[in-house]
Length: 213
Image (tube, rainbow, N blue to C red; front, side, top):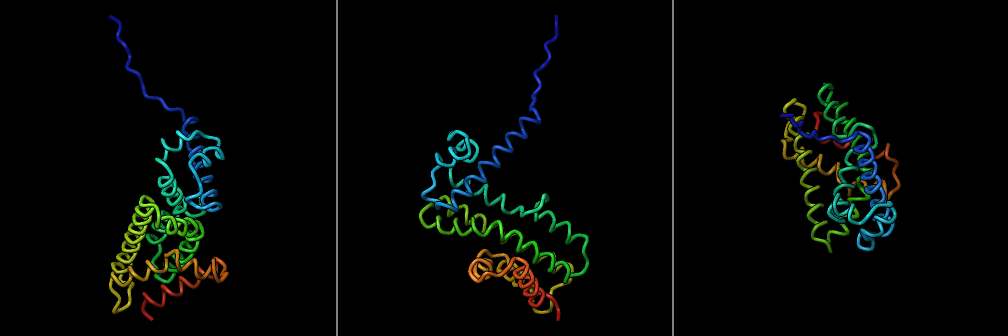
């Protein structure tokens, strides 16, 4: 009796790459249309038409506009480099021993990520007033950022870098403020600071607030 070979699951690398390109295109298109026309005025149908995909493809891949906002936010978290900013941050703090250098690098990464995240965070904040799902995405993103800042504060504490009188909670609050969209909005978007100047300001603020004199 001839044995029947079991079917092997097979996914073409080329097909996977194409699927990722399509997903990236949808995310980029949605972000552009959201920022140009506003969250409420932008429909899934408009995003699909501009991206050259079906409406069903967007709902299947993202679940609708709130899912697109979450995907845009996650993409912005990676920053501008080929390696995600949070990965670069973790690798840097592991190998670096000078706390001033660590905070300088964090300031640079903060400015970099803020340049990609702030527009969508401001959009989320405006849309959250009328859309409960977007409000939930905004709350989740805030919780994620707070968790990340708490991890960084604990790292500084465990290394013995924090100055006397500053505990993990206070350090978390300072890092949380420095990484906020509101701070970037005030200095860069409203007052016209360059990203480099903002990075230097954030670095100086963290160094003077967290490290010994």
